[in-house]
Image (tube, rainbow, N blue to C red; front, side, top):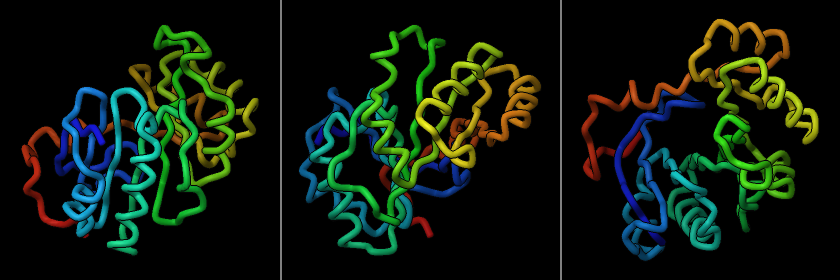
Length: 202
C-alpha cells in the first residue's frame, strides 16, 4: 500500500471535530505492508482514509486494511473520503465505515467521464455515504441537483459545500432541502502540528 502521509487530524467536512488518525494514500507514497499499518493504527478510535486522487485506486489493499482494523478494534470508526470514481470491494454493509464522496462538477474542468462513475455512485448510494458538492454559483447547484435527481440520492445525505458565495449557496440549499458543510479541516488543524505521535482518539 502506497502511503503519502500519516498524521493526527480533526475531521472537517462531516462529523466535524473528530480527532482521527489520517492516512493519506497515493501512487507517489512509500510502500507499507497492510498488516503492519493495521497493527500500528488499530488502537485509534477514528481513522480517516483519503487521497488527492482516488482512495480506491488500491481498492484491494484498502479493503484488506479496513477488515484488519475492524478485526483488531471492533469499536473503530473509519471515514473513507473518495471521489466516487471506483467501486469499493468487500466493504459494503459495515456499520464501522462511513463514506464521504465528493462528486466533482464541471467547475473542476474535467469531462463527465473523468468526474462521474455511474456504477460506483450507485454502489455508494446503497451504503452509508454522505455526498459532498463543492458549489459556488447557480450553475454549480443546478448541475449538482441534476446529478442528485439522476442517481436518486436521498436529500438527507447531500451536503453543499460553498467555495466562496456563502449566502447564495445557503439560500439554494434551504430551497432544495440539502445540508450545508463548510470544510474547516485547515482551520482545525493549522495549529496542531502533530504527525505520527498522537494519542488514541476517543
